[in-house]
Length: 485
Image 1: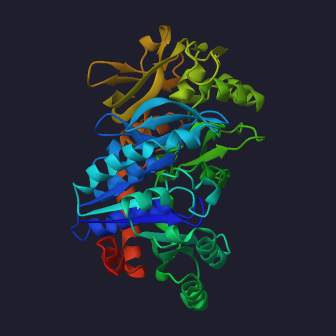
Image 2: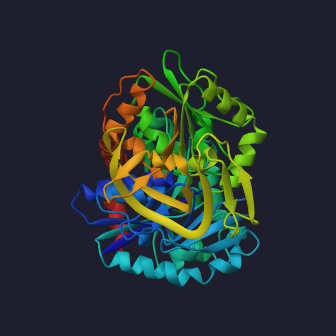
Image 3: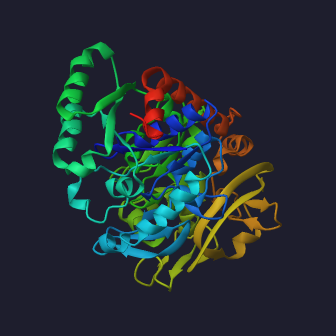
């Protein structure tokens, strides 16, 4: 058995993708591999086989290992729901709400529970590949840390430091990390990887040697720009700002980027469709009047995001789209916004409050402490569909008599208005179903490709694994993971 941890010189250096690629690369060698992230912060989450939830990146990494996601793979998940508060998920279940001021103290006792999950995984496989969060160079956060060196030291894990050359300054980032962290933490780092390289590798040879000389750490390879990573679901909302412009000649699907947007990877399957262009609409820009479909995404704070939607004037755009007969789809929190009223008497999202919705669906939502987490399969738009529910609250009203989906367990999901142009659903992941995507696009005059999104993601993981096998010393990493030099 062995284990290895990847930490980064900063956020968004590509740790999640590298862990997924390494998981698949070692799984392709016949090893039983499992992913692990002690602490994550993300509003993109997935339902696990044991009925909990974990960060979306860890679910993808489980897929890379060809295993079902489990709550032990991400024992602590923070889901931001306001500027200074986050919902705390421990072992897949909601444990409460944490403020920024008390998080440092609250996380200290969580290390024991993190270690329990790690030890359970370690006993089930040949190799655990661990992903850190942020950077160990954030020494102001070191006390009580459970995400990076705090965990690595507790578990006795060798660490590989990942630097992002695409953003520039990678030599200073790696060497600077060595300079600012304390000696005991630095001793855990056994080497480094350079990620996102474009161009001729020979041009970086001197820089690579300079990092080795100045840090005293061994280099394990330079990873080229991984084009296949664009086909993977993203966990970080940073990517949304990079997907804001549409190309001509395609029908537009527009989605406003709400401040607390969640599970925006629900929309990724539309990237497979040559007849449409997904436009993520950033703040201070209107929803395009030419959009054929407007999607209201999930939200970690529905009432607050509904207020933000109105502040941006997007409610006016949506109502104009509706008057033109345009199709509107609300997912989870977006479904709740389409109704008449949202009430939060238990202060789930903040102070107890209620809000008037957009009124496009004749339904009301009551938020409650109980969280629904379950996979779902059924039929929608006369085609098979599957996904998962992940929400707090219950939505009722006359339009639920026209459900969006009929579920295999005998239940129903969502609501459709009388005109059939406004759809609400609690099902995350439904657009991954090729038949559902084709049926929806047919309503705007586009022939769907029928491509299998899950198969496309799986192919992308294999392509990334092949690139890593060609450019990274996998044998060396495995020796380190097994306690060798």
